[in-house]
Length: 437
Image (cartoon, rainbow, N blue to C red; front, side):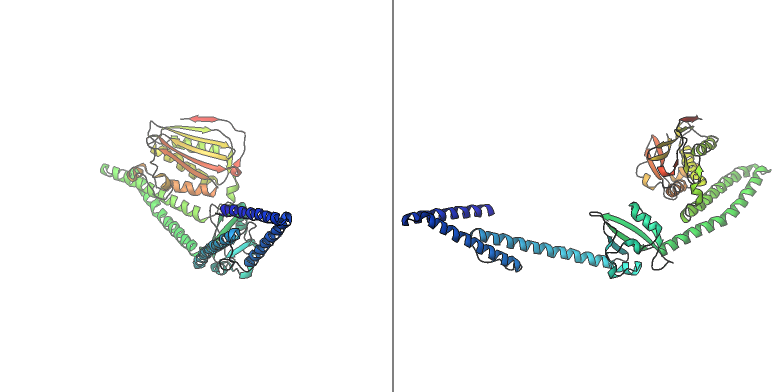
């Protein structure tokens, strides 16, 4: 539409220019009449430009001054664009108003951070939870959350998990802090009061620990009496029940020990022992040697592609590795094969336990590290597991900044791999050593 009106305007101006030249020729002044026409034409254009500028300056109210030709089209397009902008602005204002109502209704503190980690905006809950005031906008967020864990979390830019720090308003309460990235370098900081949740977790852990401690003594007594009965001259008809009772007591004792270990892993931070050197090749050699002594142990191969060790807690790592290897022994047939492989790459260390067992269906894999989760409950009980082994592995690896990956194919076997970060590794010259059963 704009192009056709421009063409018409050009044709009209050219026609009038030619007409003025012809009329001027009739009266003997062709150039003077043409010049006069150009002066009038330019004056008209300046006048229309002045009207447009005044209309824009006054806020583009109404449809604009009455005009024809290209100037009428200009007023029309500007007025239509103005109406569209007003509708868009009104719609955006509605969205913004809804967003403000939503964030104000949130019970958790929400802070919008700039690229430089300055506070750009926050909701009312942030005033209550973090003690912020309206004039704190533009200030650096670290000025209000003065905790080394938060500073490390903010600057490391790894926001995949949540951290917990004391509240800056009430030191007796704890806040769960999570940062979400969005837009061009902006971030949304969410702070939630997790004091009650932490208290409930502590009560649960204390309950599990207390009950487990209370069970240990009677189980130890029962085990002692059963061993005494097994070694004595008990009637033949009692031998099988006594043996069965002994197996159940051992299983219950293992369950209690695992519950106590999980309670400790959940409640305690990794202590200074986490900085000790753990000789992984030696540790794996000991676990595999013990596994080979078990009845029905399949072929077990230990491959050491690295002499490197780890900085960590030796007892925790032994528990995690032992659970993985014993699980493989438990669920692999006697004529099967288990390969335990320790290797190192640029990314860090990796312990892989591969077996040729029945394998696990894909739908079960996401739940394997949950407590007491069993793929086949009947068979798991027959094998003597507590249902807590992989939960322990998950907690131990998490405390060592490591990750557990599970791959399995039904009918072919499974592969459990523990990936440790490079900063946990103690580098030694690599070589390949293989132990065969």
